[in-house]
Amino acid sequence: MSVKWTGGHSSPILCLNASKEGLLASGAEGGELTAWGEDGNLLGHTQFPGADDVTSVIFSSSCPTKLFASHGETISVLDVRALKACVDHFHVNEEEINCLSLNENENLLASADDSGAIKILDLESKKVSRSLKRHSNICSSVAFRPQRPLSLVSCGLDMQVMLWNLQKARPLWITNLEEDKAEEAEGPQSPGQLLNPALAHSVSVASCGNVFSCGAEDGKVRIFKVMGIKCEQELGFRGHSLGVSQVCFLPESYLLLSGGNDGMIRLWDVSSEIEKKQKSPTKHPHRKKPKRATFTKQGRNTSASVTEQEDHGRISPKLNIEHGEKVNWLLGTKIKGHQTILVADQTSCISVYPLNEV
Image 1 (cartoon, rainbow, N blue to C red):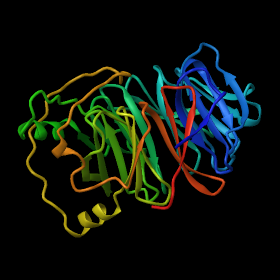
Image 2: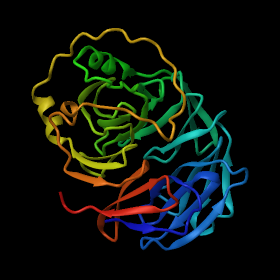
Image 3: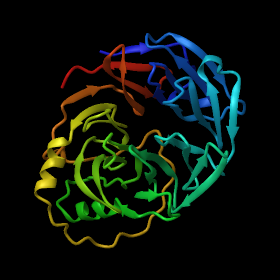
Image 4: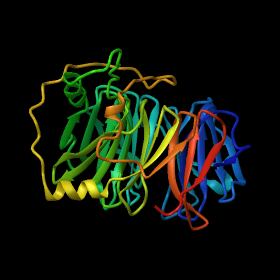
């Protein structure tokens, strides 16, 4: 059973983040931003003018009370001790921002938006140092790689996943998840089975910096490994019966949380599969060239259907949580020294699940 943190919002919560000092922040529809203590007690609340949804929040590691928040096309910098007084703000994106990522040096902030662009903001000069434009549709998620402050990964509703190095203005590597869907379409199908497009919703990079995950609308969780200037897919499995809205690696591990539109939260240990791949690399079959397609932003009531035999393949979840609501954001963090899962969904509450040793 989960504990519910209530009273901080009146609208569905869209994003979460935690500081190293145990502070938490949540952003919601209608411009709501709230700061919380470890006990779920309210520390502060503000509402941005214009009522644009708060889509991403991220704490500074070097200054744990410093918070970045995206709302509409704007990035605001705040002090959680006085949320109503904005320290600074930037307007560098042309369309609504979906995700923020701060590199480990904390000199660069990436913001991905609805146009497909990723703006790289130099926080020292307060100017855009790079504008990465390769996604042909909404860029839904971006993440700097730990231990590599000039490298990041991104994904979007064009079904593409990309690896970037900021020394270049173009991606080092691109894969189109529609290729996987094309292969599946050639296999046996159950009557009435729907093949949802592999719109990519979320990326998360493990602490090692070389392994990352992507969750997509087709219900699959994919694991990639960075090999120099390219990546290889190490693992792909049916994680959910509906779209995978969130993936999140737990710190210092290959334990991966996934959350879906099916209301399920699952914990996976992908370490053994990664090690197997390293010892026995497999040959990649020839793949047909995918057709181009364009899709709109993820809806609230997306649906898919999968056969039971496609369930999870070789890998089984170490933990299943029947959350019951579509997952908007997942966060694995320590609260009072204990590993915990925090969940934002279509309600105005934060759900807190204790994560026992696995």
